[in-house]
Image (spheres, rainbow, N blue to C red):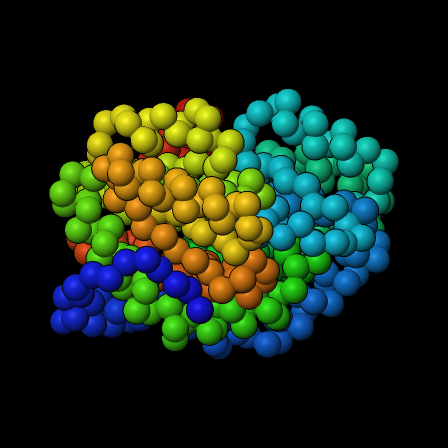
Length: 376
Ligand code: PA5
């Protein structure tokens, strides 16, 4: 069970109304997901993961934003053992990165998991073309049996290509947006291939769907209360370097859900104790417009002492410090955290009066880029 270090008075009526709104929202499907998972698809994910482990040294996961960050966060944090190494592509437009990934795979056996809900995002589309070429050069027509497409159930360029070529398909449900999709096939397939115990992950999330409602409500209320007092920056702090990508997912979740209509709290990230020797100065003594949210992963004793020292020093420096502690540093703990933060974020965005589930700013950039590229 998630523990926190704060108690705050809740506006019970407003929160009940918000929870009902989220549940009814056409993009609120992630809320029930851990308890009502499509077991047919879950079994298919495990079977495909086994096949990939048997026939591939590499799985190239192609996707960006919500189609990428969540599973990378959990895989990097848990560093599970697997026959297959996961590498990532299509999360930037850097030629260097793409060439590096192609080179890393080299002559090894590999498969591709291309992930895009819309099926039209430029960064993954370019990387997919490059890896598809390599795959067909190596395996000929049999390459089609090594492409796994995670996309919309009914439409989009990737959906159409997958149907036409008979790639194995997984669905990004209509009622779940990118950054809330970690516990769908978007995240579960790469995680299962990487050796993450996806049963335990969903178990943690399912438990949190009951037990995390109170702490999530309190955390969202704390953020809102601080936000309206001009604390405009939240710094997510972790003392475990392997969780750097989890902080990146948090930045996406909160930034993309909350930053609209000139509202929201700017999410930033630090990894201690490394950053205590750089950003630590600003945290202790810089401009007081920020608060710190420490994700206090249960780790070893020496780290525990640093956490205590930092909390005391930063509170003395005038920073509000919120602490969130998952029950364990394993699949169950990360399942809890994913659910807890998704719920907190949706409630918090609603308190700020914005829609947690759209991303008009991201679409604006995508459309402008398509226009400049002539829709190719
Ligand atoms: O959370 C979101 O909606 C975004 O970050 C998307 O996941 C990201 O833009 C990628 O979109 P798509 O999956 O359609 O390629």
